[in-house]
Length: 631
Image (tube, rainbow, N blue to C red; front, side):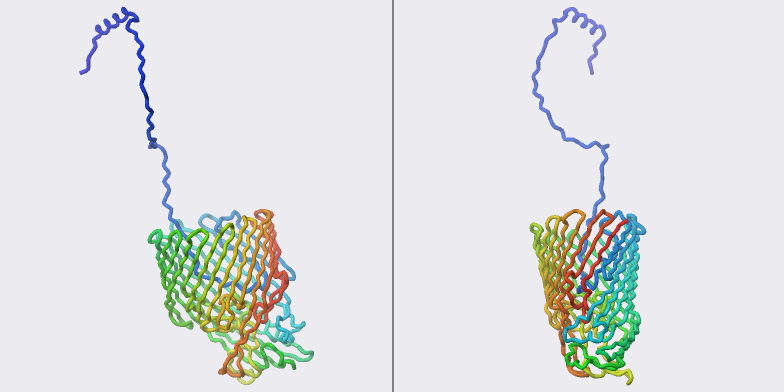
C-alpha cells in the first residue's frame, strides 16, 4: 500500500527547512561511463512497398531453314519494302525510296503504317524495279549463235517488277498475337532463245499468310497458314530472222499458260520443363499442284551456215515439234519432335524427323535430328548439325533463283538422304574473329540449270503427226535437268575485323567440288571458288561508304548430248563455261537528317562480262542513285 503524507506533516517539514536556510545544500559529482549502442533500423509500417510481378524469361529460337542466295545480281534493285514492324519502334509512320541509273534502271519503294498502336499495326507497301539493257550474246568465239540475231547478235533485255501488299498484327492482352499478310507481284520480262529475239513472259503471284502466336504458362506455340498462287502467262511469238545476207529463219513459239498452287500449314510448340530442359515439336505440311501444258516449237525454213561444223553450240535443223506436260501434284508432311537442353555454355537439341510423302514425290522417311552449340568462352564457339532437309522446289522457288528457267521444267521435291554441317568461330580478339565452316550431304533429286542439245536430224515434224520429245532444242536457254543421288559439298572460311565504329572488314572464301554429280546445291553456276571482300567505312557521322569485290571462278553448267538420234542410247555429259564473274561494287550514303538521306550503289564498276546462265549475259555496269525520306 502506498504511503500517504498528511497535510500538516508536510507543512512542518517546509517550516523546518526555511529555518535552517542553506545548510542542507551540497554539490555531488557523479562520474559514469556511457557506452552508445547502435540499434538496427526497422521499416515503418506506413512506408509504401513496391511489388513487381514475376518476369518469365523468353528466348529466341534458332532457325533451321536456309534461304538460297542468287548467283549474281542481274540488275541493281532496292531491298524489299519493310512492311513488317522493326524491333526498335520508329517515330515515323512512312518512308519512300527512289533511285535511277542510266541507261535505264529505276527503283521505287514506299510504305506507310495506317495503324500504329501498342497492340496493333497495319502496314501497306509497294515496290517497283525496272531495267532495259542491250547486250551482245555472250558465246565463245567458235559459237555462231549470235550470227542469227540482228544488230550483230545484240539483244535488249527488259525487266519490270511491281509488288504491292498489306500486312498487320494485333496482340490480345494475355492471350496471343494474330498476324496476316496479303501480297501481289507482277513480273514482266523478255526471254531470248538461241534462234530468235525471244518472247515476253509475264508472271503473276498472289500470296496470303496468316499466323497466330501465343504462350500459356510454360508452353508457347505458333500456328501458320499460307497459300501461294503462281501463274505463267500464255506465250505465242512468231519471228523471221535474216542471216548470212540472204537466208531467213522463221520460228514459231506457242506455249500454254501454267498455274501452280501451294498450300502450307505449320505448327511449332515448346514446353519448358525447367530452366534447362525443353520439349517441343515442329510440324509442317506442304501441298503443291501444277497444271498441265503444251509447248510447240517450229522452224519453218532455214539451215545452219556453211561453217556449221565449227559450231560450238546446240545444232538445230528440225522442222518443228511439240510436247505436252502432265499436271503434277505432291505433298509432304514433316514432323520433328525433339528434346532440348541448355546451360550457360552448351545447347543440345536431339530429336527425330519423320517425312510422310504423298503424290509424285517418293517414299516415307525417318531420320535423326541433332544440333549441338558449344560456347566455352566469349571468344570461342563450335556448332554442328545432323539432319535431313526438304526443298519443295516449286516453280516459284526456281523462278526466284533464276527467272530464265524454262517453263517446261516439272520440278519436284529435293529430299536429303544425309546432311551434316558444322563450324567454328574464334574471337573476337581486339575486334578480329575467324570463321570456319563446312557441310556434306546427299540429295535424292537435284534440279540444276543445263544445256540440252540434239544432233542433226528430225525429232518430229509438225506436218507428220508430231512425235513426242523429252527435249526442247529450240528453247535451250533456261533448261533444267535432274541429277539423282547428288553429293552436296561446300567448305569455307572468313576473317572479320571491326575498328571501333569507324570501319569493318570481312574477307571470305568458299569452295566446292565441280563434278557432274558433286558440288554445292546452293550454287546455280556451279562455281568452284567464291572469294568476297567487303569494307565498310564510317569516317564522319553523316557518311557511310561500302566497297565490295566478289570473284566467282570456275563457273559452268553441264549439258546432255546423245551420241546419235534415239532416246535409248548412252548420254554424253559436256561442260559449258559461264565465265568468271568478277564484280567491284561501291556504295555510299549521306544522311542530311534523321528523315532525309542521299544514297548510291554501283555494281560491276570494271564492266566485266560473264553469263548469268547459259545464253543470258550479265547487265554490265548497274546501280541506283537516289534519295530516301521518312515521314
